[in-house]
Length: 356
Image (cartoon, rainbow, N blue to C red):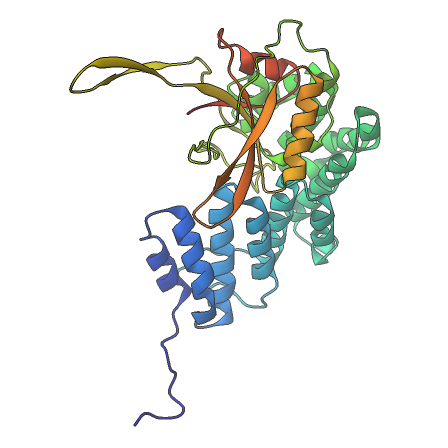
C-alpha cells in the first residue's frame, strides 16, 4: 500500500525536460515534447523557463505565432529562472513576444503586449525596443506609403536620439526600407559596418521572408516592374512536395537590433545527374523564389494579389509540419535566365531561391 500523500508521478525540472527534448529527432518533436511536459514541471520557475525556451525554438523555426504565445505564457508566470536554464527578465520576454507578433503581422496583439508594464520600464534598452516596436506596429497598419509619413517622422527623431542608440541600426534600416533613401543606408555602412542591417543595405544579406516586411509599405515597391518580367504559368506542387522555409543565418528581429536578415543565396538553376543500373539520365532540379510563409491563407492570398498586380505569376502551396501546423508558402517559379529573384527584388519583394 502506498501513502496517500505520495505523488503519483515524479515531477521533472526544466533542465531535465529540456535535456530529453534535445534528444528528439527533430525540432518539431522537441517543441511538442516540451509543450506536453510542462504540466509535469516541478515548479512555476520550471514552467516559466520551459515556456521561454520553447518560445526560442519556435521563433528560430519560423513559428512566430506559437513563439509569441509561448513567450506570453512565460511572462505571465510570476517566478524566477529555473536552475540550469537561460536567465531572462520578464520585461525581455514581453519584448520577445511583441517581436514575434510583429513578425506575424499581428500588430494588435503586439500593441496589447506593449501596453503592459514594459512601457514604464526602468531599463533604457527595453524602452528603446518599446518605442521601436510601437512604430513598427503602426507601419503594419499602414495601407500605403503616404500613411507611413507619421511613422517616418518619428523614426527620423529616433535616429538622432541618444535614448534610442541601442536600436539605431534597426531604426536606420527601417527608414531605408520605407523611403529607399541612400542617406540611411550610408549612415548604416559608416556607423555600423559590421551589423546585419548594414549587410542588408550592402546586398550581402537580405531581409528575412516574414510577414512583417510584406505589411510595411515601401516607396521602392511602387516602382514599375521591368517589361520583361516572366509571366510563365505553373502548377502548385503536390502535397508530397516540400520546401525549405526557414533561415539559418542571423536571427530575425534579434532582441539586440530588432532587424530581420538571412544569408543571400544564388538563384541559378542547377542540374544533377542520376545514375541507374540500366541507364544514365539527367534529372533537373527546379527552382522557385519563395516570398513568404503564412499560417493564415488570407495573408498568403494578399501577397499573391500584390505580386500579380506587378505582373508576376505567383501561387501558394501548403506544407504541414510535424507539429500538425499547416503553412501557406507563396512562390514564383524561376525563369530560364535565372533572373526572377533579381526582378522580384527590383519590384520591392524580398525572396530567396529554393530547389524542389
